[in-house]
Image (cartoon, rainbow, N blue to C red):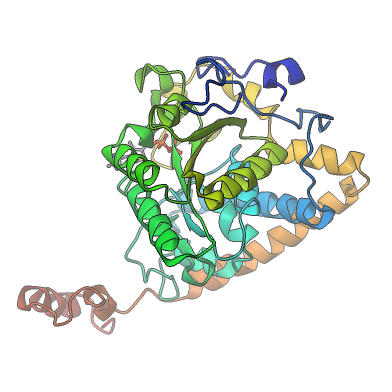
Length: 391
Ligand SMILES: Cc1ncc(C[n+]2csc(CCOP(=O)(O)OP(=O)(O)O)c2C)c(N)n1
């Protein structure tokens, strides 16, 4: 196993976390120094220590899904600024966590995401059009406009709706994993969250439950340095997130979250650990939130200058692109063609989503109560008066 800083000459430590080894309580292995698993360096050179083979078709699919995610995020921010959508969040710089993480899973595994993981959708061939219907919260939105933008879901792909209150997906994932274990399904649940979310009670409840019940659940933490404006040093005193997994007695890995090989290999390995009955796994993926927290945030007020430039060099998309070119699987010309294709597909999808009407008012009242309570009915009647023709 190679440490990120030895391999790339750039320290990942910064203000974040020491650094990887697989550490498991009671095995007597390791000390509290946790190294970072990393194979693909910043200029796209794969370490010879990497034994994880990824088929060329998967590498190319990952690349496309990452580029799609990046482009979609850029367009969403512009649309929000133009007033066409209400809100947007970007995964700029963190695309490997979602895409390569989903690529390490198998069909039928459940995914519970936070909100910066749209890449899971594109890995699982989610239509770009449906993504934009959700961003516009229109009548074709899977949530019928009841959620904010970026709260995607795909029931047919086992991707559970994003939930705004942080951490609520963690006990849900642990419970789903335990249910699958009880039923004898050979499937896992994977749950994404950010570093800030590990300070929520639900993180501790969910991880402890899964640990005690040996539920086949992969807890995937994107340690991107910030919880909105709160840097890591003001969030917790531990060496990153990995010690929290060790504390709960579960298999724990720290990886370079911008390296598709490290991410995909570790998720596939975690999956095997889960299905071998060894209990849940925590993965801490070291990455960086290069954009603002959301369109309501201005990171220039709290982030030191130069930090983004440092992480721009560690870009997961560029890194994979460089590797593919070295393997003669990719070229600048193919890149140009791909970006044009993505851009055209997205532009068309945005136009369709924009022209799609908002959901009818009655959908606001449905799907919760068997019989609509009278107070709600009164509100509905008032809404109908205020918005004639929209019921
Ligand atoms: C229970 C709860 N508390 C606070 C918030 C407000 N909030 C939204 S996102 C966020 C930061 C989360 O940071 P992190 O988990 O590190 O994820 P990141 O945004 O960095 O990807 C906060 C505090 C919320 N949505 N839910």
